[in-house]
Length: 477
Image (cartoon, rainbow, N blue to C red):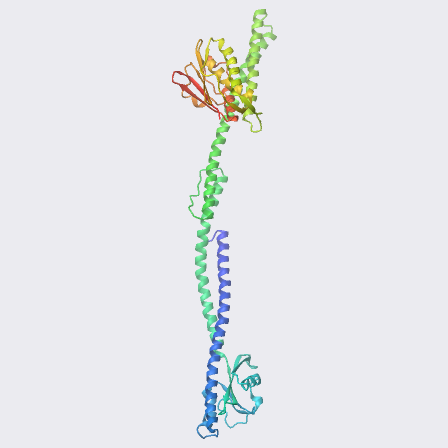
């Protein structure tokens, strides 16, 4: 039942604490109860002694102290039975008048008094009622001696009454108290064992459940949940573990997505490199084997090789740019950039690129009265990538609109737009549409533009315009 070590420890600690508590309380109880019984016995002895002293005072007052006359002698013979204990009467001359139970007629001596009687008698003849506690020499048992003065007719002290009694009731009562206490402790321990086990199990049950959850998490099962609802620290810990499991599950999916992206990246880059490398190798083999000897054909192969080399250079440059921009360690040197200077320069470069296809670039609003903190060359590169992409997908003699409103720049082409299935993926690496218009693209341009925008706090979104074509919107901070 108690397989949990914590449950065993809690049960042992609980029972040990209860045992210590019971023994401590029992000790105090016995001590206080003993004192209570002792005080009661003192009061009883004092009442008996005072009663005897009062009776003797009456005899002395009437001068009726002769044996057999007026009852004095009879009273003295039975004084021990009357008191129910050992009684000694001492007169004013410190002579022992009587002692013991029914010992009349015997010669009594002062030395027959108890060991502690002298102190009591001295206090009594000073007019005080006095108690003395001592242990008998025979049985080492606690005894009480009480002394009460006998007052004569002239209010003087004519004698002393001493009652000497062992306190047997205290021992008996203490024994009974110990027995009752032991039984109570035994019952309390029995109940505490049951309660301790129940409480320990209920306390450790959620901990064991969290342990099993942690084991499953360590094995890679991040879908597990504790489902523990408790309004305490254990409940808080269970919620944290559940949240950790949720985050690990998200991290697992993200890791799988990144791994898929890595594989896709390797596949794409291999594909992108294979084509120009194959063309270069084939052309070089033809030239080296002198299969082609005509100057015009040789020049054609040289031109093709130069074109493929430029493509490789552009691909490597784009890869380096994207890698730098995606690295958290790469720091962009930012300065104040006046958009009134940047936009006209971008437009001039774009007009030159568009002139080959006789595309008209229409700037509805030239001026953007805004100064931003950024890298001038990177911001220019970002805008040029999008404009170059718009020129690429705009047919000959088409139009491109550049609209500047407040803190937004939108670039809209007059092409056929972006298919809805492609739209969510156009900013991914090596993602490009198939077609004659995009045959020279590396699939990295828009990914680079997106990273530049992110590093500058610019929101870059793509959508299809109402008049067909595609629109890219830059929302500056």
